[in-house]
Image 1: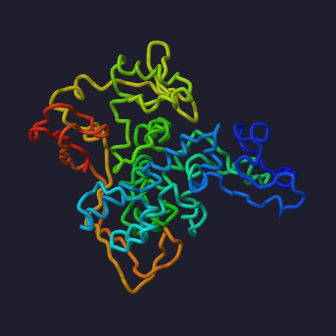
Image 2 (image 1 turned 120 degrees about the vertical axis):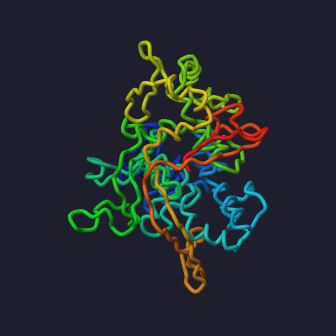
Length: 418
């Protein structure tokens, strides 16, 4: 009876013939009036606060919801701990405090306030639509990634319902991943310019602007973007949604690196059988499996990666034996040579004005103390190489090199783009 009023067209897996509206949205589908039908209605079933009653119910996605709630995208644990450590508020950058705990404990240190005012819009636990302007698009739990708005003919018919999809589009990722390292921008070849409308177009301000007003210049995109690959083609479920463990930093949750796909054929063949394993069978064993699940398959005499959304096949080439495999290059990350440009921000400053008010993204209310970021100038050029030293065994994200790299005993030294 919901569809007698609502002109909706859900995706096939969640449609009326499979589930029905109230399995996810609750409410009463047999009521004779809108008021009674909408009692207890959940507009966005994907919100993490209630997802165990909707998306995470038995027979649906309980494991995914449980792991997602512990993931770094839901907790912001890495951002908070690193920020507070470098601002001298804690003695360790492995502090296990989440965005929810930050709110419950009502921590009011400068670093915590800075996070609440400038950083706290980008976590999946935030309620979608609660903040003003373009910030309303962020958050939403499961639907932050797995929903797309109606397009084309559906939008023209007035269909409102977002489509649930496992093929996460690039736009959903870039909605949050466009500041700090700006990876969502550089992947598309978008360089954030000085902020003065440059480069000018025919004497006028540039028309290339982001949703928040920042100007950008179009440069050479990443080779994977040019091949039509989205973020989710490489970054796995265990990376994005978490593996159920409380990690302190992003690199601890990563399981993909360049050499995962750009490897010798014998190494890639180990991934083929895993990609063919039924999803639910993999879910039951994922804690015991230490190799990533990617859509790698055999085609003729080659191994290819299948695009999640467009099913396009991408041939997997091994690293060059004449350059990449040379001993002198084994201490370099792949990005050290293969990055054509990176954004360089010089002279970044943060100003705190105690007399002004600013929106606290956690509470949704203005509070005293406003923050503003400044940058002296930005440039795009070849990456500056830095040395990363990790005592003991390097974690999975830094496994671009092994063995003695010329550093101190018991350490791994890796050159990375700075």
